[in-house]
Image (cartoon, rainbow, N blue to C red; front, side, top):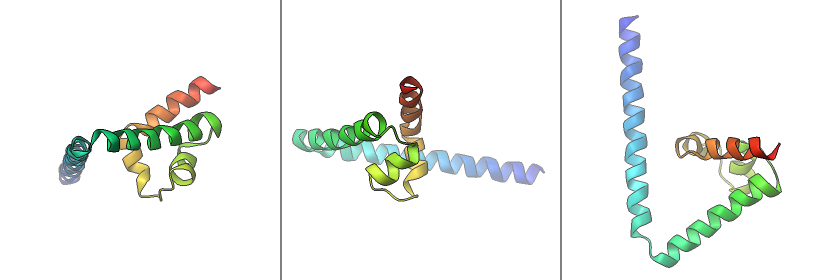
Length: 95
């Protein structure tokens, strides 16, 4: 049981490290964009969130797969960046 617990702890730490590295890389990418590119990215994302959440009032999966056009590989990344929390907060206020 101790070995399993140690293995799970190491796996959890590796996952957390991977998420932090992704966040660092993503911040570096964002900061490398020009003002116009950041504006375009912001507009594109918010437009899709608005459609998914306020117009369609779809599920989290609906937003990712149908509105943003991602496949299942985006599911966890959407959780990691806080989009599921945002979706749930918006959904609760729309009921």
